[in-house]
Every structure is written in structure tokens, then in C-alpha cells.
Amino acid sequence: MLFLRTPLGEERIFALQPPFGGAWNRMHAEPEQPWASPVPAQNLGKFRKDKDRVAQKERDGRQQRDGTSLSQPSTPTPDDATDAATAKISAVMMASGTSDLRSNAATVGSNGLEMEEEMKLPDRQHSNGTVTTPAYRGNDMSVEANSAHKGADHDVPETTPNGARPQPPGTRKGSSPLAPAFMVSAPGKVIVFGEHAVVHGKAAMAAAISLRSYLLVTTLSKSQRTVTLRFPDISLSHTWNIDILPWAAFHSPSKKRKYYDLVTALDPELVEAMQPHLTAVSSDAPPAEQKIQHAAAAAFLYLFLSLGSQQSPPCVYTLRSTIPIGAGLGSSASTCVCISAALLLQSHALAGPHQDQLSEEAEKQLERINRWAFVGELLIHGNPSGVDNTVASGGKAVLFKRADYNKPPSVARLGDFPELPLLLVDTRQAKSTAAEVAKVAHLRTTHPAVAGHILDAIDKVTESAHALIASADFDSNNLAALQHLGELVALNHGLLFSLGVSHPKLEKLRGLVDDADVGWTKLTGAGGGGCAITLLRPTTTSSSSSSSPSPSKFQTLQTRLEAEGFEIYTTTLGGDGVGVLMPAVLTNGSAEVGGEVIDQDKFLRAEGREGVESLVGVVGGGAGGERGEWRFWRP
Ligand SMILES: Nc1ncnc2c1ncn2[C@@H]1O[C@H](COP(=O)(O)OP(=O)(O)OP(=O)(O)O)[C@@H](O)[C@H]1O
Ligand SMILES: C[C@@](O)(CCO)CC(=O)[O-]
Image (cartoon, rainbow, N blue to C red; front, side, top):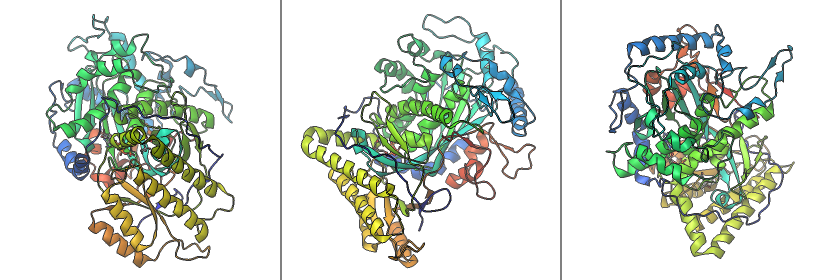
């Protein structure tokens, strides 16, 4: 039987900050947008089962199915071979500290992004007397992408009437080396209190989990004018020709957004301009599968067109996740955070996380990533509150509230976790967040007074839980305190059930846990399937450290849960948010000089969740501890 734990291995939950209001602030219940992708449950279930099979297919070199696919980036040209070798050498040199590519960092702004805000970042005085300018130095991830970028910039011809800048076939760019591959990673989350109500302006309490998505960014030879997605978890593999993408629409003066803008809604004209480039994605896949793939592709493409430029380096973006998809654990938000962070890094709009980074600087970078991740979530969910991407960006635990969608949300970081033993179980009934959120919006239209009261009641539950946990004398080993919190958990579930977002499998799960009398259970995330959390009851009434029900009770429960086909997850609560591995090289006990270079092939070949974690996991490595090569923005 497994628990959610803090990174220190303790079972804890949050010490909360200032009180939050319960006002009914906003009815944010627009109908689902046409580009949002309700994900049919049965298909997501299939994807989860098939994850490894799909990865195998990728390994077997399955060809892309879409009509617009270009040459497979994995088939190297002689130029590629030279560039790839150079990139590997650069990566290893960087990893072993024998190369200083930082001097390349001076070129900025060639990506079309506005750079003036970045220029305002304060220089930092180090204890040794040196000063670094955060955007361009330190352990600066953005630097290396620059060389490829600059080369592209020089050779770009005038635009054609449709705004595209065609590349003459066979054109050989300048001889700058390829940017080494790098990775980003972001966590999933559990919502402890307040899901759905948070979409309607109430507060929610949520924490990062240790299940994560990992995105590998591999730069191609400049002679290839392509951008490729390889998302094997959802059987998506697609290549676009960079030069024919709708840059003119996205970069017209009235449409172009700055990398630090707060974008709270999608631009329908831009969504429209993207459509022809999405229709070719997985065009021969079954419709339900295609919806899932289109949602992910749309999120990527909108961000790529917003943050990149026609001079963006040709790249392959390979994503693998250990988070079950459509299970309420924030898989989409984690994906969007990875994409946002990678594109912002490539656009030189972020200083990579580095030692001695000031808290406010880290916060600013995270905010930037989070804002664009929210835009990705708009494409997948239609109407997200932003809590998932906020946790996936910043990690740890938060009390989140978005009263006004035109303003940034209020986010109180919950720095300290009181002990709280939780059990996380997945019904493996896949669902669509967009569909569940739309259900609640519909209920608000058909039964406004009743639905309004239910949402208000959820707000009160979150408020009470916050007050309880934040109180100085809260002790999760104390039965009375835990009983009180547990009752709030059960109340929250009952209210979510009333909103119509539970599922027979979630009720079955709850029944089994109730029968075992081990604690209090609620669904977590959007519901309609997916996961539930159980706050475990202590076996003793004393404040002893043994706060869990007896092993035999657990054993019986575990057997019964597994017999129903439910899956019990091991994870820790409150870990780091988005992280960067630049270059994509890990020690991994490798005999390779400078460490093991993580390339596409190795990454795709990693077997399942364990394989991904043991190859690249932010925690994993030989001793199972944190891998020091991963860096995080830590506010
Ligand atoms: N590993 C992944 N690879 C590619 N795309 C993914 C991946 N995980 C999620 N997605 C995208 O996100 C969508 C799932 O989002 P959805 O909101 O329905 O589930 P969730 O984020 O897991 O749950 P919740 O929002 O309740 O936490 C998928 O349809 C897909 O488009
Ligand atoms: C159901 C919901 O409240 C949580 C999904 O994880 C939706 C959202 O907040 O965007």
C-alpha cells in the first residue's frame, strides 16, 4: 500500500497562508470552444494500456502517416552526421565543463520576440565580486540554441506574398555547430480540495506529484526546415515544414504577443489560421484517437507560432510522460508546461535556472512559463482555471484562486507541509477534463441556484481545510484533527458527486475504501473517472508516528482494488516544478566520457514508466536520489 509523501519521505501536507474569500465572483462557463478536444474515455484507456506498445512501434521506425510529412529527421544526411557529431561533442564538453559556449549568448532578439523586458533584469553581484546578467549567463540554457538560430537568420530570403520565407532546396547554412539536445520536465498534480469550484472563481488547494512529463528537444541540421512532434504516449508523430506555417497571421502587428504577455483567451483568427496545418495530423487515425492527437498538436503549434519565428531552428520534440493520461493528475498541464518552457528557452526569453538565482527572478521566469502553458491548456481543455499549469510550473503546493480571468490568479505558495498520509488510486476509467468542466457549466445554466450553492459549499470546505491545516497546532497524527480533515474530504467528494462529475468506478473505489474503514476518499481532478485520493485514518489515537491503518487491512484493500482493475500509485507530494537538463547528458554511471548523452533513440527505447525514470528521471539515478544535473527555478 502506497502513500503520497513529501520529498523528504515524510507524509505531510501544506501549511497554508492567508485566508481566502468565498465570494461568488465569476461565472466562467462559456460553452466549450470548437477547438477544444473532449477526449472519449474509452480511447484514453486504450492509450494508457498501449503506451509501451506504442513506444515499441516508434522504435521499430514506424513511418508517419500524414500526407504532409517530410523526410524523417532521424535519417541523417552527411551534413547532419557532421553536425550531430559536433553537437554530441559540445554536449559532452558542456557537461564536463570543458567548453564555454556562453560567449555565443550575446545575440538576442533574432527570434522576433521583444527583448526589452529581459534587458531590464538586474545584474547579479556574486560573492566573488563577479556580476552576471541573468538572461544570458550563469547556467544559461538559452545560449546554445543561439548558434543554429543565428545561422538560419543570415540565410533567410525575403518573404513570399503569403508571408513564408522559402528555403532553396539544398541550401547549406553557416558552419555553426548544432545546439546540443536538452530536456525539460514538469510534474503532474493532485487537487486536494476545490476542483471544479476553482473554474468558477473559488479557491483550490493542489500539490505537485513526482510523476512527470519529459520533453527532449533535438536540433536538426539547418538544411532541414522542419519541426517534428514525437509523442508516442498518444501515438502522435508529425512533421511540419516550418516555412509554410502561418507566420504572417501570428506575427502581424495586431496579433503578435510578447513572451511576457498575459494571454487569457485564444484568438479565433489564429486558431483558424492553424487549422489547415492540423487537419493533416494523423488524418487516417480513428476520430477519437485523432481528437487526442489534435489537442496536443494544437497546443504545441499555437505556442510554437506564438513564441517562435520562421527562423526557429529545425527541431524534433520528443515527449514521454510517467503521468497517466486523462486520470485527473494534470497530464495535459504538465505537457503544456514542458512545451512552453522549451520554446521560451529556445527563444532566449528565459534565463535558465542557475545556482544563486534570486527568488523573485525564479518567480518571474516561472510566471512566464506558466502564462504560455495556460494558453496550451486553453487549446486542450477549452476552459481551464489555470491551477494545473500553475502547479506543474512552480511545483510544491499552492492555494490557487482566479476570481477574474482577465487578471493573473492569486497563488499562495504553501511552503510547509504538515504530515498527511494519502493513498492515490486510479480507476483507469479515462475521461476528458473538457467534458467534465462543460457538465458543470451546463448545470449552472440549468440549475443556477442549486449549482451555485454546491460550488459555494465546496468553497467553504476548502476554506475550512485551509484554516485547519494552517493552524499552528495542527497535527496529522492527532486522530481528532485528521477525522475533521477527513470529513471535509468526504464532504468535498459528496458535493462533486452532486455536480455530476463522479463515475460508477469512482463510487466503487470509494465503497471499497469505506468498507475497509481506512480513511476518507474523494475524486481528484476533473472526475468522470480518473483518480481518487484517500486520507488515511491513523490506527492509534495517540500522537505516535504510526499513523497508518494496519498492514493486513491494507493488504486486503489492495487485493480488492487490484481485482477491480484499479491501480495504486506511488508518488511524493510537493516536489519541484519545471526543470531543465541542459545539455541532455546524465552521469547515469555511464562509461561514456562526460556522461551518457540522452538521444532520441535511447529516450524512445526506455521501457515504460520505470524505463523513463531510470534513464532521465529527475529522481532516479543509481542511488535513487535526485539527479543533480537537473536544474529547477526555485522561488
Ligand atoms: N503524455 C502525453 N503526450 C502527449 N499528449 C498528452 C500527454 N498527456 C496528456 N496529453 C494531452 O492532454 C490531453 C489530456 O488532457 P485531460 O485534461 O483530459 O487529462 P488530464 O490533464 O490528465 O486530467 P486533469 O486535467 O483532470 O488533471 C490528451 O488528450 C493529450 O492531448
Ligand atoms: C476540474 C478542474 O478544476 C481541475 C482539473 O484538474 C479544471 C480546472 O481547474 O481547470
